[in-house]
Image (cartoon, rainbow, N blue to C red; front, side):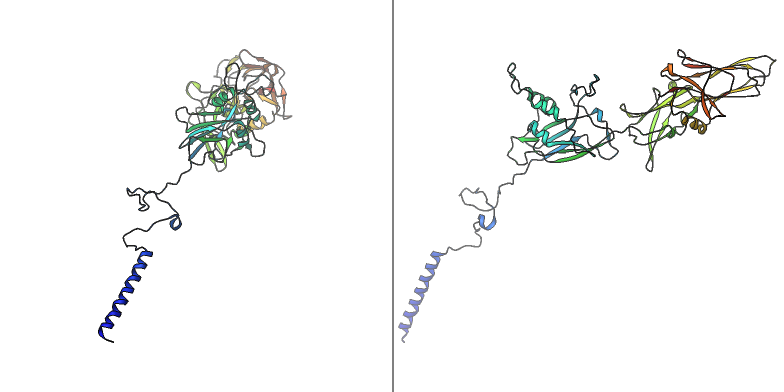
Length: 465
């Protein structure tokens, strides 16, 4: 083969190669290293907006934001933080007073309506009330031992049956009532509203559970999801009546010049943090609620200053509230220790006046005492008077070196049904109380005047039955 023929073959081969490359280039575009590839829904699952002036999509600069659901905040009343957090079930009133139950006991008394309350807040839109039927179906109030709801459905049905278009006034009376008493929203900020749920009268010392289901309160004027209230459950405890007996009062008799810095101790159960103590109608100076293990007790500082207790018999009133009261009738006695020794004189009689009696027939060197009993003995005698209400201190009249013909005593009395009062004397032989034969109930001076020939233990009582 000559050189020229060999050269021709080489040229033809190069031409064929170049032609082939040109065809391939036309079918597959060339991608350069610094040019971004097209991002599609198939390869990344996201779409991106085109913000370039030339209309080309140049990358993931502005993704479409995910729509967040509405944020609800619900606060509840009443709601107990713990088992000792109590609410007075008789004062769960509406903010607007003046709604009453019908006569519950057919005795003419009116009781103000009670409500549980829910305060709603959302971060967008306007809160609205769905309707009465959804409220009836969506809220329940249950005690621990019952599956019957305490929501006042009868009252809600009365609202449901109210006129929605009064022909005379043109008013929607039902809606006006709902706006005033059931669903109250903030007129300047409709992201806030309060729902009042009417309930029947509750029992004291009870745990209640409240259930709120979705669909009672809704949100309008928003495109965000979660436009109805969420489910909520919460509990609250109603207040108890203090559980205290006479034996729980450790000291039941004190001297008239008592030390105001020393408290008396009263053991008990079901005592609230706000407990108050009164002696008749005189408030204790201070009351401290204490606990010793599981045992509650009160440190009660007696009245002082111008309110200091004078000699007499006092009922102790322990109250968690004005409706949760325990009264121990005639439990505290304030008495002076009245010992009188007459000075030596000539041989003639004296008249001695004491806070509890006038004594005649005494001669020199004679002693007579009108005093309170030793606490244990007093408690034993109190226990034997279960059928009576004590209306005076239990007073012991004793004497030494005397030869009494008779004596009179005046014992101060507490208020009560005076026509039923009796004066009893304790018979040490029979161990029984006997009615004194000669006494007068002095209503004006609130004293029992006794004329007797015998020393002993005396008390003024009122029969319970």
